[in-house]
Image 1 (cartoon, rainbow, N blue to C red):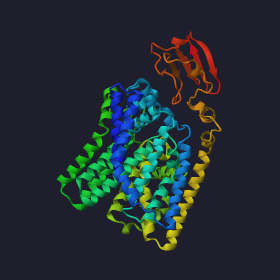
Image 2 (tube, rainbow, N blue to C red):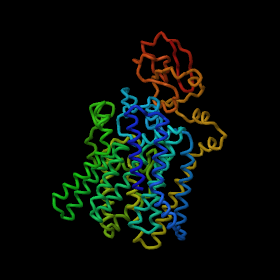
Image 3 (cartoon, rainbow, N blue to C red):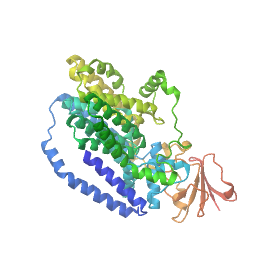
Image 4 (cartoon, rainbow, N blue to C red):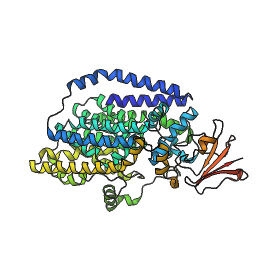
Length: 522
């Protein structure tokens, strides 16, 4: 799995380099993708052969039952992943920016404020660009879906350090049954990619505390750097690991010089990996962290954060009334974690410290998307709440496992109901056009050419000024956001936006009452 992480990082930066050099042409991107994927499979072929030769499925009925739940959940999520994209942020920039870069054959700074995320590190989006270049709007969703599967594999093998195979698969069931994981698995977001890197970072870090090999510390730092390059908010995770390094050295009474060396190694490696993107941002915006700390994304710490009641109220919302609430298993098992905490190993106590600090990072992070901001830390939470099962009496252990199974079945039912809308499309009983016309939210900035006006009238030499649009993932025509562009041939306005004075004399030639789009031509 570490090899897969490095593959994603190197591949992403290769695509980024093609974009910086203005040679982001689909044939070249496709050749790069085929070479990388083929090379990666060739490099790990012996590991795969060894794994399949030595893999033995346990005959434990409970293990098989828990594995069955995971497989069913995977199949349910795959149905959604194969359907058309509906996720807001994916339609806004995760998928749209790669399309824009491919169209212009370069990665560049977009001045207009709609795409103020264009300068942020985009490891996962660069991978999506390769998927989009191969063809199909669904491929980025499948990439994200498989990153969720990869996270489950990492969590299982990490759990084997502490638990039996049965409890390790229970850890995966708890994690994968979270509604936020199911929702993210069917959308082209990036949070499962960040989760994949962060659980690898924690695994390597725990290994370092056990064997004291600097190589493992550097490996953990690399994974953290890849997480930051996926989502800049992962800088909070860097802070967690720096705090853990300090605590580890303090508890072991190591020399201060060694502590400072380890802190320096971890910081330098973690920052070096996203550094090219930060330099890119600084060159174009004057800030390596744009749009944070700017009017486009104001960030400030409120004194209300010091109120413990505010913390618990926010946590309660996360478990109850969030759009994608976190599994109740975490709350239910928390008293047992406290009860059996003295029996934990040092490594598990390290994981518990990581989990506690992650709550603090989540709390001070601007949260505009529900449970996905705590998603990267859910593997650690899942691992932590399983350990009491090792010490609980048989009756209590069976009750706990039963509760985990019930929550998983409820999650499967909920996600099956949510993903049922994709079934007619997958079976060919409904076209993609009909599906998007029905399910996109045109009143909230989504766009789709429902009446084929743009497909019929737009040519490759046309340029459409779009005003009032927000989610342009399905805008398959040349468009610009700047009214100062000299090559504009059409003006398209969505919603209540008004046409600029420069184009007041242009004639209204088309209106779509469903998508709330008006089109003008000179």
